[in-house]
Image (cartoon, rainbow, N blue to C red; front, side, top):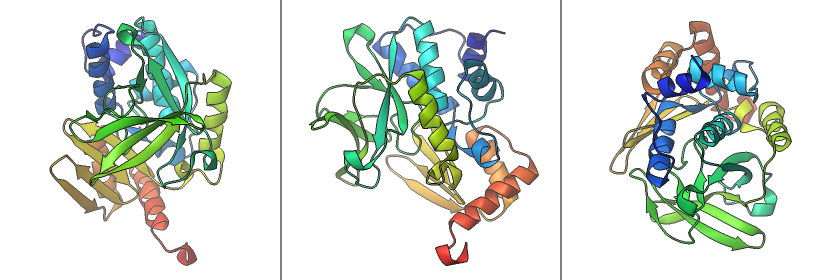
Length: 276
């Protein structure tokens, strides 16, 4: 099988959609439904590799989760192969109401221009990320079943804020501009995410996936299932329960000893600092 055959199988497709706006929206949503975001393997001691063969093996053949540098790099390769030219960009994550200059360029996104209009694509953000592409239109609200999003332009520095509506208020997810991110930029960002002590990926267990009209989010020992109309939260009590949740909700398996390590890590992250 070629890597494209593995991709079709991973996305449960028999052929590729036409690379226009409708086909891109379909492919983007299928991507976030099929390939989970997560840092499981990093917490288990395997740093991500960004070369093509490693991404195909991990994300497509083994069916493991990945984070932005892995997922969006491979997604861009697919779209380029299908004839849709993409450009990579580095974003600044702003989940805690920081200002743009206070955050590093630590998140990888991409843009593409199906039918002559430029769209933001991001299949690797995690908990609150977009399900489908968003056109670069200032202030237009896009309802994506689970959440609503909009893009706002920023003049200083010039770029765009991606915002998500939460309980009637618009919250920044990240800021990005259209400067090109080259492979060395991605490797530096990946190295920081995988090795820097301040990187959240080295501490908190995070796995997310879109499941139809629901967003599934595992954070340490807490599983949340959220739709537009309802939400539920479950506290995971044992490593066996965590192992079953990864398999049932996110579509990949870990060994019992690995589940034990992940469960213990999640337990430790919830302790007060003095008890860690």
